[in-house]
Image (cartoon, rainbow, N blue to C red):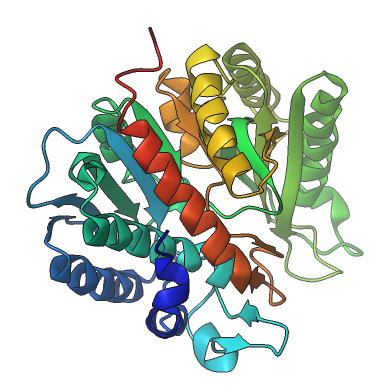
Length: 382
């Protein structure tokens, strides 16, 4: 069998280096669009049409289908944005170690997946396998911040699909079949400043109010299946001043939609009143990703991929993840979805992020074989 990931390894690494060395943080529109433009040119050379889904503040999203596409019903989803600030690529650019480990911002999460998808489709076209006409690719630019502007595109195009393949990177031989739902909130508290020694009675501590709220929010963790984390706090002006302001960022996770509704209500109830008289509370945010629980159809899709993995000596296992992805949206809609189909590595969102280059070939071949197998499956819901 032809192996494009071996035959065109030099070109593959050249492209990977090019997009890793382009900063594309979620709030860097120019950077995300630059990555998108690189990929647009690559896909055009293969005969694909690209619909640019324009955004004003964040990067554009791309919907890609072949010129010969006939009612594409397999959707591949990946994101072009990273969590890293501008200048990161210059500070620690793409490198490959002697033991074939690639490093650089976003190399694992998830720029290698972009290259994997492109060369998967290129291989199918070279082989003239008809499934390339049935595949659509959606590349978004805001996944790391909750897919705020791309969610409706994800749900729109997934509604046409018999299968959704999320090529988020993997940490091993597991594929994600379920994910917790999640939400994000921003809490702002106003108090009244005063000298902490000369006139403390005239002040109203916003930090004191925040302390009460943090304790109550974290007490929600005593309930099974939910997680609440106040992960970022700030406030005050100086040690000898009663704090006139305080802020925090809150993250929630839940296993079921019912838990999510209860948790959202509980957070809002806790933050609906003041524990310290005179403080003013403002809350924004809410649930950003629904819970995704594996159903029979998704597990049928997993079983198909598992069997293709066996042919490549890959023993794949289903896992449940506490983290979120765009698979939450499609899986929650009941569309057969499998996540984690990207290459293997680790330390996402860290300076030590890495990619096992050999896995780009392994997971690439798995994706090729999976698409071929999907070509013969009319539906997973029958």
